[in-house]
Image (cartoon, helix red, strand yellow):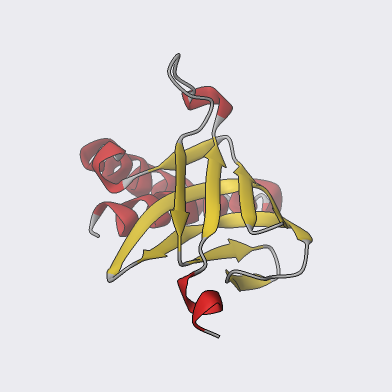
Length: 143
């Protein structure tokens, strides 16, 4: 029983537009648990989880390790869980210190203004999604 408690899962976040020469991963570490936003709601992953793949929505990736909880903003993507490895592929994955709060705040105000000014359904949907993206980035920046 104690063996299961000590077991970790390997979290790997790949953000191709943010790759470095040092590593293909934006984040890679053995952790206790992750909670991510999928298109159908939040899902928590613990060691021993059966394999699953999912489509990610825009939301906060919550990373639990030891007594700490860390956060990362994800804007869509896919996740795959297998053999205690969680692999996330997302175009945008930002840690709190990477969020440009001034720019995101200005973008948020602009998207809200554009949303209010248009009557076109598709434009309203686009501005609503952009507003949500900005809100997630600001939420992560506050952590």
